[in-house]
Length: 224
Image (cartoon, rainbow, N blue to C red; front, side, top):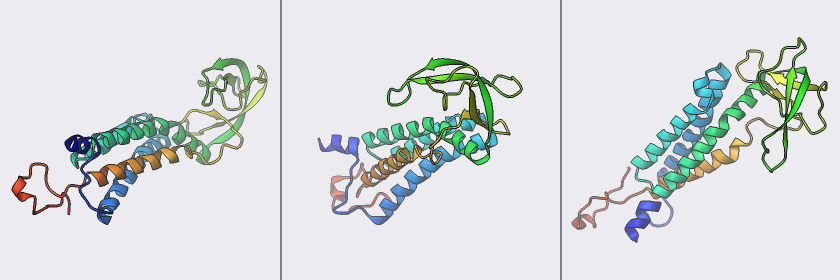
């Protein structure tokens, strides 16, 4: 049972509070992982690099973080939790990154609704409506707008749309009271930092896993 507990949750071979340097390492690893996941996606959206903006690079960062946790001997359960949190953060980052780009350099213009259709249910189970629109020159937008498109919206209505003048992120409807772009990522990033911190702290070993019984009286720290 002790071996199983060590494999699943990590050895955590310390008495009392963990060493301060171990806590610092865990915080650094988690913070760097979260920043790398979000930062690469934001950089890709800002510069128009689809290979970075679509979240694929973020998943690579998740894989690197997972590999590091495995190399330091973290428990499998904590490694899995950190990997799942990181993957979710990487998949949510593209929409947040596009919102940041539009908030910084986006321009608002008026478009005309040509048709309204029901879309997949949004978060919370509320129905979502998708509006096909054309700009002032009658050119259809390649994406359908759901922000600002509601049950009462009809063809011929005008909608406010924010677009990137450089065309690197798709336009989206103007949403009142949207708040700070990317705020939805904060809880997931914080959870990833906590999971990484726990994994690193609990990976601490006083002696190597292959140490002989005669060496038990001379513990050796896993990391200085």
